[in-house]
Amino acid sequence: DATDMICRQVLTEKDGEITCMTMIREKPALLVGNENGSLRLWNIETGKTLCRNYHENSVTAITEGLHNMRRCLFSTGYDGKVGVWNVICEAKKVDLELVLMEEIDEKELLCATFSFDEASGLPTDADVVSSRLSGKSGARDSQRTARSMVGSGAARGVLFCAGNSSIIHMLDPQHLDSVARLEGHTDAVTCLCIDGYFLFSGSDDSTVRIWNIHTRTPLKKFSVSFALRCRSSLVGALPYHAAVTVLFDPFVVLTHAHTLAGSHKGPALNICCT
Image (tube, rainbow, N blue to C red; front, side, top):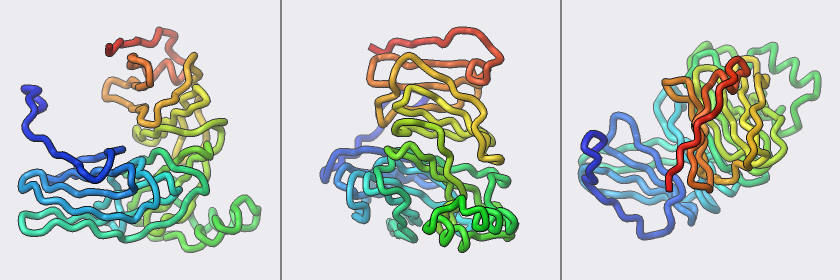
């Protein structure tokens, strides 16, 4: 209970260690990813569960998004793949349907986030032609980009995922087509978070970077004196315009957004959680 801080219910996963989870909006459901590559859907009210095994290794992130203009869930894993899932969680039926799964990176994917922004940088006809003529996309990216839903005018958002390759992949959620690759980090990208049309990324290279997802360009690099080594670390934009970083050490680092942007010289606040 978020108000009284009382534990109301305990759900036990027996098949493996839980590596990630998310609550499903407007449904009394919880989806968890496990170290063995499985995903389990829980109906919180009835206790009914359903397990699916499609990832070949640990599931690292689950995030909510849009696919075919419908709410869905995206999963990433150590196998470098992204899965798209339709969720049915009703009193008489619990189902987790795999819609699409594609290999996005040769290395492990560690994190993902989704932007519901209507103008989130999906390609136009001019973008596709320019990309293919300039040769900026690889052979695989060119083929995938050619299938992108160009010019539909529909608000479908964009999916971001990243991992040990240090590349942030920007994907059209319809077919998981590559829209862009955001490069700049020099080590594994361990966490991603969207705030409006800003993307925050945290990395083992001891930096937090801010990206404009409309122009697909970096805005600011914020260096810290410690490595962001925890794969479950979080960089989140709060309503109070601050970024939060969680590490292996017992500190939560709270940084004012203006500090990241370079317009505020105030110190970050370290909160000890021992």
